[in-house]
Image (cartoon, rainbow, N blue to C red; front, side, top):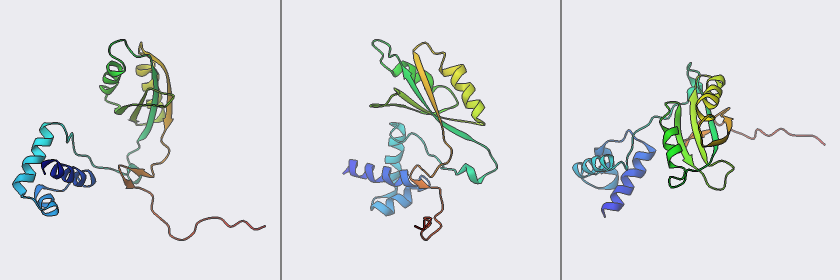
Length: 166
């Protein structure tokens, strides 16, 4: 039962991190104190690692550039990819680090900067010179359509296909 309650709490918080213990308790039919204790326990156990707000930066005056960096590395004997992934994770510019399978890159990093030039400098000054880095590929995000299960683009309605006459 406890695992089921945890799963329900996590699913609700993942969709809306602003829900409080009282709201969640009412939604899953549990006691408010029990839900609050379970949330606190999951935070302590690092099951819940933080709460985030998804922002559509295109609708603000703040200019941000986002990129995904593919990194091909030579794994270190006895440590695999962990040492370099942990080192990359410590950079303030790095938002996320993922170990990949079946890709041409071992790690994928998501980073943000104020400009494409900032991101380029970060890659060639901090990532590329690392001893186990073999190569990098930078993919700039041109437009976000969906992020964290939130759709950014507004539907215009109707059929927007262009009709081509024979």
